[in-house]
Image 1 (cartoon, rainbow, N blue to C red):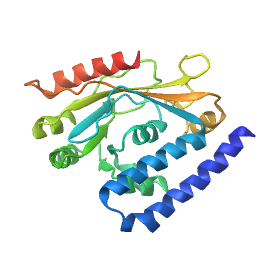
Image 2 (tube, rainbow, N blue to C red; image 1 turned 90 degrees about the vertical axis):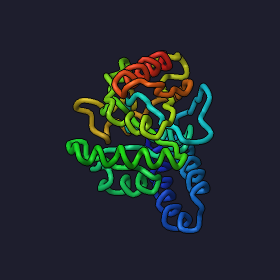
Image 3 (spheres, rainbow, N blue to C red; image 1 turned 60 degrees about the vertical axis):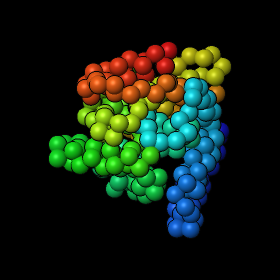
Image 4 (cartoon, one colour; image 1 turned 90 degrees about the horizontal axis):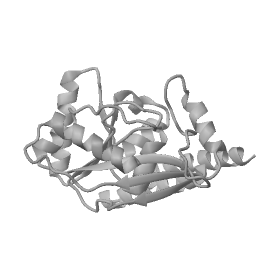
Length: 241
Protein backbone atom coordinates (compact mmCIF):
# COMPACT_ATOMS: atom_id res chain seq x y z
CA UNK A 1 0.00 0.00 0.00
CA UNK A 2 2.89 2.35 0.76
CA UNK A 3 4.38 1.70 -2.69
CA UNK A 4 1.03 2.29 -4.39
CA UNK A 5 0.63 5.57 -2.52
CA UNK A 6 4.08 6.66 -3.65
CA UNK A 7 3.25 5.65 -7.21
CA UNK A 8 0.13 7.81 -7.18
CA UNK A 9 2.07 10.79 -5.81
CA UNK A 10 4.78 10.24 -8.43
CA UNK A 11 2.24 10.25 -11.29
CA UNK A 12 0.55 13.38 -9.97
CA UNK A 13 3.92 15.11 -9.67
CA UNK A 14 4.84 14.10 -13.22
CA UNK A 15 1.65 15.82 -14.34
CA UNK A 16 2.62 18.87 -12.33
CA UNK A 17 5.96 18.86 -14.12
CA UNK A 18 4.20 19.11 -17.48
CA UNK A 19 2.04 21.94 -16.16
CA UNK A 20 5.17 23.81 -15.03
CA UNK A 21 6.78 23.35 -18.46
CA UNK A 22 3.81 24.52 -20.51
CA UNK A 23 2.21 26.91 -18.03
CA UNK A 24 5.08 28.59 -16.18
CA UNK A 25 8.30 28.18 -18.17
CA UNK A 26 7.34 30.64 -20.96
CA UNK A 27 7.14 33.41 -18.33
CA UNK A 28 10.28 32.53 -16.36
CA UNK A 29 13.85 33.75 -16.72
CA UNK A 30 16.55 31.04 -17.10
CA UNK A 31 17.61 31.21 -13.43
CA UNK A 32 14.01 30.87 -12.30
CA UNK A 33 13.57 27.86 -14.61
CA UNK A 34 16.64 26.22 -13.11
CA UNK A 35 15.29 26.80 -9.60
CA UNK A 36 11.92 25.34 -10.62
CA UNK A 37 13.60 22.20 -12.00
CA UNK A 38 15.61 21.74 -8.79
CA UNK A 39 12.52 22.22 -6.59
CA UNK A 40 10.54 19.79 -8.76
CA UNK A 41 13.29 17.16 -8.49
CA UNK A 42 13.47 17.52 -4.69
CA UNK A 43 9.72 17.05 -4.41
CA UNK A 44 9.83 14.01 -6.71
CA UNK A 45 12.44 12.37 -4.47
CA UNK A 46 10.10 12.97 -1.53
CA UNK A 47 7.23 11.40 -3.51
CA UNK A 48 9.41 8.33 -4.11
CA UNK A 49 10.36 8.12 -0.43
CA UNK A 50 14.04 8.93 -1.10
CA UNK A 51 15.92 11.13 1.36
CA UNK A 52 18.62 13.36 -0.17
CA UNK A 53 21.95 13.67 1.65
CA UNK A 54 24.48 16.12 0.20
CA UNK A 55 28.11 16.33 1.30
CA UNK A 56 31.01 18.48 0.17
CA UNK A 57 31.00 21.91 -1.43
CA UNK A 58 28.22 22.25 -4.00
CA UNK A 59 29.32 24.43 -6.96
CA UNK A 60 27.36 27.66 -6.84
CA UNK A 61 28.32 28.98 -10.26
CA UNK A 62 29.59 27.79 -13.62
CA UNK A 63 31.53 27.11 -15.60
CA UNK A 64 31.88 23.60 -14.22
CA UNK A 65 31.51 20.04 -15.48
CA UNK A 66 30.15 17.55 -12.92
CA UNK A 67 31.40 13.99 -13.48
CA UNK A 68 29.53 11.30 -11.53
CA UNK A 69 29.30 7.53 -11.36
CA UNK A 70 26.09 6.07 -12.77
CA UNK A 71 23.83 3.60 -10.95
CA UNK A 72 20.23 4.26 -11.88
CA UNK A 73 17.66 6.33 -13.75
CA UNK A 74 17.26 7.99 -10.35
CA UNK A 75 20.74 9.56 -10.58
CA UNK A 76 19.45 12.37 -12.81
CA UNK A 77 16.77 13.35 -10.31
CA UNK A 78 19.26 13.15 -7.46
CA UNK A 79 21.80 15.44 -9.13
CA UNK A 80 19.11 17.90 -10.22
CA UNK A 81 17.87 17.99 -6.63
CA UNK A 82 21.38 18.58 -5.28
CA UNK A 83 22.35 21.20 -7.87
CA UNK A 84 20.55 22.03 -11.11
CA UNK A 85 22.69 21.15 -14.11
CA UNK A 86 22.39 20.38 -17.82
CA UNK A 87 22.91 16.69 -18.53
CA UNK A 88 24.52 15.09 -21.55
CA UNK A 89 22.31 12.13 -22.46
CA UNK A 90 21.80 9.59 -25.22
CA UNK A 91 19.64 10.89 -28.05
CA UNK A 92 16.86 8.31 -27.85
CA UNK A 93 15.73 9.65 -24.44
CA UNK A 94 14.56 12.78 -26.27
CA UNK A 95 11.83 10.71 -27.90
CA UNK A 96 10.61 8.87 -24.79
CA UNK A 97 7.01 9.77 -23.92
CA UNK A 98 6.81 12.26 -21.06
CA UNK A 99 10.42 11.64 -19.93
CA UNK A 100 11.78 13.23 -23.10
CA UNK A 101 9.62 16.31 -22.59
CA UNK A 102 10.81 16.72 -18.99
CA UNK A 103 14.46 16.10 -19.90
CA UNK A 104 14.42 18.59 -22.75
CA UNK A 105 12.76 21.24 -20.58
CA UNK A 106 15.52 20.73 -17.99
CA UNK A 107 18.10 21.68 -20.62
CA UNK A 108 19.47 18.25 -21.55
CA UNK A 109 21.98 18.08 -24.40
CA UNK A 110 21.58 14.96 -26.53
CA UNK A 111 24.29 12.86 -28.16
CA UNK A 112 24.15 10.00 -30.66
CA UNK A 113 26.81 7.78 -29.14
CA UNK A 114 27.32 5.67 -32.27
CA UNK A 115 28.24 8.75 -34.33
CA UNK A 116 31.76 10.18 -33.99
CA UNK A 117 30.63 13.27 -35.87
CA UNK A 118 27.77 13.86 -33.45
CA UNK A 119 30.11 13.35 -30.48
CA UNK A 120 32.35 16.11 -31.85
CA UNK A 121 29.30 18.35 -32.27
CA UNK A 122 28.22 17.79 -28.67
CA UNK A 123 31.73 18.39 -27.30
CA UNK A 124 31.82 21.68 -29.21
CA UNK A 125 28.38 22.62 -27.85
CA UNK A 126 29.43 21.67 -24.32
CA UNK A 127 32.49 23.90 -24.59
CA UNK A 128 30.26 26.80 -25.69
CA UNK A 129 27.95 26.21 -22.71
CA UNK A 130 30.90 26.13 -20.32
CA UNK A 131 32.24 29.37 -21.77
CA UNK A 132 28.78 30.80 -21.05
CA UNK A 133 29.32 29.82 -17.36
CA UNK A 134 26.81 26.97 -17.29
CA UNK A 135 26.87 23.87 -15.06
CA UNK A 136 26.95 20.63 -17.07
CA UNK A 137 26.86 17.02 -15.86
CA UNK A 138 28.04 13.76 -17.40
CA UNK A 139 28.16 10.08 -16.48
CA UNK A 140 31.54 9.17 -18.00
CA UNK A 141 31.02 5.42 -17.49
CA UNK A 142 28.58 5.62 -20.38
CA UNK A 143 26.23 3.09 -18.76
CA UNK A 144 24.90 2.12 -15.35
CA UNK A 145 26.65 -0.18 -12.89
CA UNK A 146 25.48 -1.91 -9.71
CA UNK A 147 27.08 0.70 -7.48
CA UNK A 148 29.70 -1.64 -6.03
CA UNK A 149 32.33 -0.65 -8.60
CA UNK A 150 32.97 2.24 -10.98
CA UNK A 151 33.52 1.36 -14.63
CA UNK A 152 36.33 2.98 -16.64
CA UNK A 153 35.56 6.57 -17.70
CA UNK A 154 35.22 7.51 -21.35
CA UNK A 155 37.42 10.56 -21.88
CA UNK A 156 35.85 12.21 -24.94
CA UNK A 157 33.53 14.58 -23.08
CA UNK A 158 36.40 15.84 -20.90
CA UNK A 159 37.72 17.56 -24.01
CA UNK A 160 34.97 20.18 -23.61
CA UNK A 161 36.35 21.20 -20.20
CA UNK A 162 39.88 21.34 -21.62
CA UNK A 163 38.76 23.47 -24.57
CA UNK A 164 36.83 25.87 -22.32
CA UNK A 165 39.48 25.85 -19.57
CA UNK A 166 36.72 24.87 -17.13
CA UNK A 167 37.05 22.80 -13.94
CA UNK A 168 35.65 19.32 -13.42
CA UNK A 169 34.03 18.43 -10.10
CA UNK A 170 34.04 14.70 -9.23
CA UNK A 171 30.73 13.51 -7.75
CA UNK A 172 30.24 10.24 -5.89
CA UNK A 173 26.72 8.77 -5.82
CA UNK A 174 25.45 6.04 -3.50
CA UNK A 175 22.08 4.68 -2.43
CA UNK A 176 21.94 3.43 1.14
CA UNK A 177 19.54 2.03 3.70
CA UNK A 178 19.28 4.76 6.34
CA UNK A 179 18.71 2.20 9.11
CA UNK A 180 21.89 0.20 8.47
CA UNK A 181 24.06 2.53 6.40
CA UNK A 182 24.62 -0.33 3.96
CA UNK A 183 24.34 0.00 0.20
CA UNK A 184 20.86 -0.39 -1.28
CA UNK A 185 20.51 -1.98 -4.71
CA UNK A 186 16.80 -1.16 -5.04
CA UNK A 187 17.23 1.64 -7.61
CA UNK A 188 19.80 -0.25 -9.74
CA UNK A 189 19.07 -0.40 -13.45
CA UNK A 190 21.49 -2.86 -15.06
CA UNK A 191 21.58 -6.03 -17.13
CA UNK A 192 18.15 -7.51 -17.68
CA UNK A 193 16.43 -4.98 -15.39
CA UNK A 194 13.48 -3.13 -16.83
CA UNK A 195 12.77 0.48 -15.99
CA UNK A 196 9.39 -0.52 -14.55
CA UNK A 197 10.99 -3.12 -12.24
CA UNK A 198 13.61 -0.63 -11.05
CA UNK A 199 10.98 2.02 -10.33
CA UNK A 200 8.82 -0.50 -8.44
CA UNK A 201 11.75 -1.67 -6.27
CA UNK A 202 12.48 1.98 -5.47
CA UNK A 203 8.86 2.60 -4.51
CA UNK A 204 8.89 -0.48 -2.25
CA UNK A 205 12.18 0.34 -0.53
CA UNK A 206 12.11 1.49 3.09
CA UNK A 207 14.42 4.18 4.47
CA UNK A 208 16.16 4.74 1.14
CA UNK A 209 18.66 7.60 0.96
CA UNK A 210 20.56 9.04 -1.98
CA UNK A 211 24.02 10.20 -0.91
CA UNK A 212 25.73 12.80 -3.11
CA UNK A 213 29.32 13.73 -2.33
CA UNK A 214 30.87 16.65 -4.24
CA UNK A 215 34.66 16.64 -4.37
CA UNK A 216 37.13 19.50 -4.89
CA UNK A 217 37.20 21.03 -8.36
CA UNK A 218 40.01 19.93 -10.64
CA UNK A 219 41.62 21.76 -13.56
CA UNK A 220 43.29 20.03 -16.48
CA UNK A 221 46.64 21.64 -15.62
CA UNK A 222 48.23 20.35 -18.82
CA UNK A 223 46.82 16.82 -18.59
CA UNK A 224 45.33 15.19 -21.67
CA UNK A 225 41.71 14.08 -21.51
CA UNK A 226 42.52 10.40 -20.90
CA UNK A 227 44.81 10.91 -17.94
CA UNK A 228 42.45 13.53 -16.52
CA UNK A 229 39.44 11.20 -16.87
CA UNK A 230 41.36 8.45 -15.04
CA UNK A 231 42.21 10.80 -12.16
CA UNK A 232 38.63 12.06 -11.90
CA UNK A 233 37.45 8.43 -11.79
CA UNK A 234 39.84 7.74 -8.91
CA UNK A 235 38.42 10.76 -7.07
CA UNK A 236 34.85 9.55 -7.64
CA UNK A 237 35.77 6.14 -6.21
CA UNK A 238 37.15 7.80 -3.07
CA UNK A 239 34.02 9.94 -2.70
CA UNK A 240 31.80 6.85 -2.78
CA UNK A 241 33.66 5.08 0.03
